Length: 327
Image (tube, rainbow, N blue to C red; front, side):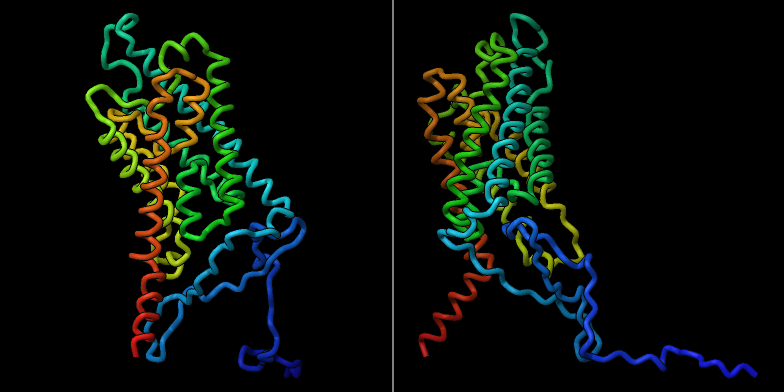
């Protein structure tokens, strides 16, 4: 009879003090100096209560970004993110402004009698929304994929980015927009000047109030979608609903363009409006330029307040503090 020892699952005992960590469990954390890795402990995907029922995922509120972070400006990841914002905004303006100019050329009554020719408003909306989806997907892991000063401003108010990072992002976005429009003009100068350079302007029949309102509401929709799609609580609260964040953000841009292209040409992005106005250089674009800064910034501020204080935990904490101080 074979006397060799046999091992069973019941005969194996592990010390509770041993902890096995796979190298694959390490995540690269944005903001960590190059060559260093930060290990994050992930909460269990599903927890069981005492009666065997499923409980919600553990969640720990991330700390707010500091107003001024002197450490981040010493890291390469900070400057890499700025470069990513510059390139992404450049590519965004190049593709979308070309689409707008192409549409205006195809529907020019002196060249084409078909008023329904070209890609139409639907095609323009797809160009803007599709490019945002692609570029946010590509740059989210590097810079967060803002590509819009209004988005950066909303995330700053929500304490997601520091003041220094917000300012540098906005500068990079505006510079990228100018370069993107400059490329379009260098390749198609005659068409660029003749068909408006893709600059945002109030359409005939709409007053300043209508244009400003369209920009405020359109930017609110966009920034609210960004804050909701990137909310870290979603991983705990809605773990059963996988969400690819760039998808709803791109669709928000698409839907807003469908609604507001006939009014203002759809700004909702001060860098996009500023870059086109700088390169186009006509007086009409500059006369109404303030609408495409004031409107988006107001819309972003309202979205940040609504998401952070009305829907978020900040309102609950403030209410709890108020109640505790009254007794």
